[in-house]
Length: 360
Ligand code: 9MR
Image (cartoon, rainbow, N blue to C red):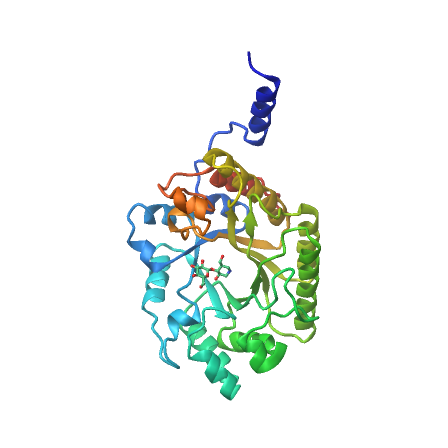
């Protein structure tokens, strides 16, 4: 005899995952039908993988370099650039009729070792603006993260304005942000200029404070007529940790739209650290959390793109969590597993994309 508890469990999972036929279209096709772009992070070495590239080309309309546009990867010595890997990625995108997103021109992290001491000694604006000009003059991109993560993560701010300590803040004060955006606009009048960060999606009081310092930062930029087109919402979610607060996220996205800014979901993935060892349960929790996020993000007409931070678990770094390491498990953050099979996250994304209301 089937227990009442088993019946309830079966009923609940049937509700969460109706046995709908899987959408046979690609994510980029489903997204395009709803007026937005689907893309993903990638790296040039992945393009040698013959199991992977056909799926990448089929699914994605846009690529963003996972790390090959970071300054440490490009400007190995002052003024000396190595563009080889990044050129490979751009050439692949062009061959496959994909657009590119840039990430990132100014960040506190992933800078070459020579930069911090030189900046501290000279405080020369050209150490910021020459780099921005060099990258933007070389590549045609749809959008670019001009400044990434300038604000202290939720709960860690040590300053009233919420800025994160960085070599740039030390050298120029908060004015480095405007400096970077002006240099970017001067170098490329067409590319969408983005401020990109994480911590907007969840409901804690620390997230509330983070949302309000972000609005203050954006309001200041808009008031000073600093050229900015979009807010990049990274979308690093957690299946078993701090959950998306749909009501607060919806209200925040409305604030962004009210300011005339575009919204880009730039680095969507769902961390499945914690929870049970049951793979099916993990995958369901990952899919559910992404769906809760995307339903709100896509309901805002200002949202013009969704990019995942990798397309396949094959290219997600090995987890730090010792138990997972011991079992040789990987994090299951992305729409495809390491064997390039679609996961429940793929279905959740396809359904959220297909369900977008169009606002004409
Ligand atoms: O995924 C990226 C990893 O491979 C790099 O080593 C790391 C440092 O360059 O950056 C990771 O990507 C980060 C992104 O650039 C900014 N947002 C957070 C991302 C990590 O989740």
